[in-house]
Image 1: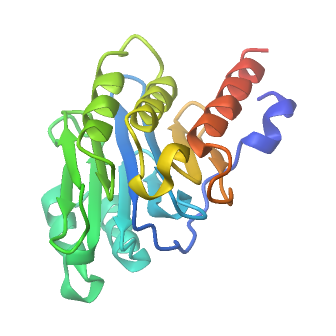
Image 2: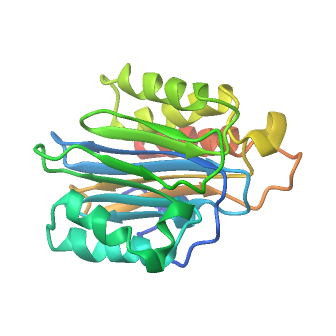
Length: 234
């Protein structure tokens, strides 16, 4: 791995999440390469705490209320190869206040489609769109176009790498309006995580802490992503 990319490559660490009440995200797998990925953006200080990748297994996102313990319960069960429906059922335990949460789960197993649960107390616009190998979800968005445009961008670029498709999808969500609280800034924080089985590591790129009304987080993340791709090829 090129030493120049050290500042941009972060091994996965499980961290306590901040509340991310308005977010759009994509979870995805590439069953040919074994790669697992997540991207997300929000009008909050740091959105990256919504996500967990379980290497060799799958990925989990808990956004809106973003309950850390619900996410960790999901991670625990995913490591044990528990079926997704059972994992989701466990995460919907009342102690995790599931009606304030938006859950997204996906695994590499080709027999399992991704699952999304949107609690009754999360705010509009909220919703999701699912395929066999990826899912797009969000809450407090400008409208349904954020989800549908992100979905289309990911689905129509299957000739590209998983990381590139995730970045394209997040950008499409930004162009469609993003988090409605951020106006034309669209988001204040954004991240991309991809597990690469060949390296046995998770690549993480993130932008956070941008002041409201400042630069666009997804655009900045895209610039960082382009730099990383350039360095990776050297």
